[in-house]
Length: 327
Image (tube, rainbow, N blue to C red; front, top):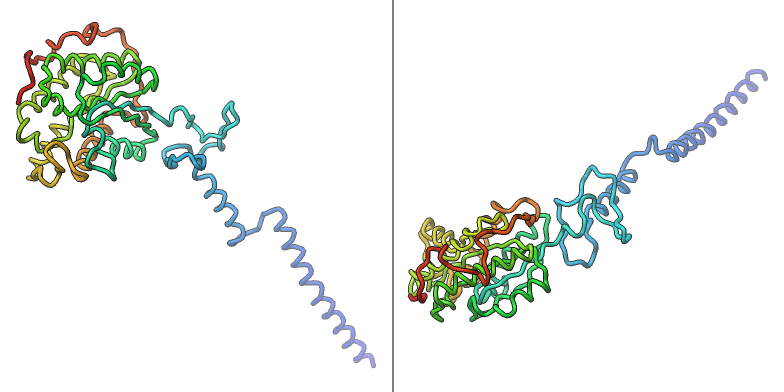
């Protein structure tokens, strides 16, 4: 009888232990999950991953501006709020994200014969917007068939209206050569265009034109002289706000170095095709990245230059003789 009582007591104790242990473990797990001290596994990682994915793109939706990986900081305390209540990435005020560029020139600068790429200048500023922290907003006033005299009555109005940070002077020269514009007149107009840009606190990019078939045939001597002439005009300012990009000679040098002909790059005698525009843009982007600072170039205030004079002044400093631009 005593033996049966002991067996019954032991069975009751084992049953009670079996019921108590799972309940204890469940309570402990619930307690650990509430303070997060022992939470692990996929359920714990997922919220953090989602948060990182959300904060990686600081550009507002619908702006058309691709997020730039150089903007913002991985060690910041979070986004900042401007006085208008808009949220901005740390160290990335909106006014520093866009540089307005006014382009003047003729058909090649306008991008003729490159319908999908938009021309070498459009390709260039699109690439720069992707490769740098800055978005370049291009106002293209280049017009096919026009020469340096064509903007006398509108240029200053454009400067006043658009207030560009950069003026890109990209005359092709062939229109002026064809129209027999005198060297003196051409040099004076380029000088005046640079001078007006500086007076409006805009930096100047003087870009010589991509080569074409005419660069090696009909206007081989004259166009080379014209490009050298406008470079000398720009250099005469001795101004840190004036940048010269001699794409004309760089493109010629590239073709020589690679033993290539102009034929695969031309659409007609005066205009590159898409491949020619693409090569010109590649060379120009490389030159710009070598000369511009990593962020947008900033206008440097300087005393009035002694080389400036009314209406563009004399072209004597360019070293070019007076007379017509003849082939």
